[in-house]
Length: 185
Image (cartoon, rainbow, N blue to C red):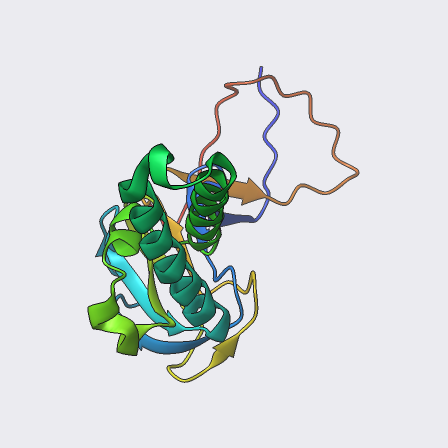
């Protein structure tokens, strides 16, 4: 025999399959590329931002990259081992900083002397396919590190969170059946 318990529920995103889009450095939002309710694909641009720290990191990378290429071409016969190591370490550190700020390898490869006017601008991309579930921001808004700009969710796998009164003693096992009624469906 079954004991039936009725409880109000809320449909939520699967916490294991959702993705919070947030800047890793203080930034200003320049442009949105996706809107609420839109299905986005992995790698798709979601929002373009500007950051002073990003501009500095891109400039540091360009300098370090140029120096590393120059020193590498000179070779060990012309240049000391410590100078070679220093140039390589500085290059790797500047590259790592851009990765930490959220730049993709492709975005880093486009950094060159010819596009220094766009320094500081960067795009956050979808790390997985899904639907834009929230996008509570305006263009021109300043956002802090870790602020949620967008939430992407896999709309094919949702959770229902039921609010059961603490006084109800439930003896449920994994895979217990449940009936979810949403507007008669």
